[in-house]
Length: 85
Image (cartoon, rainbow, N blue to C red):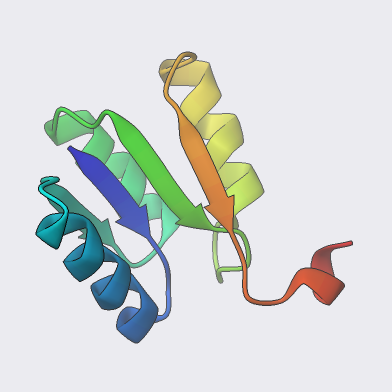
């Protein structure tokens, strides 16, 4: 199961739709806190997360993920490359 985390609903829905059509089971979270909750409840095998989100950004989410699930694969994405470099 893939967890897609993004505060922009349209992007999150689009990515989930693409992955579902490719045959993957997908769950979605609107922020890092919701993502951590879903990780507790579901058998997640991959996390795809936005970097720039309010509350808990993608880097903070990865830090919390690594503490509890150190081998969890994570892909970080962003639409604002110039703001994070």
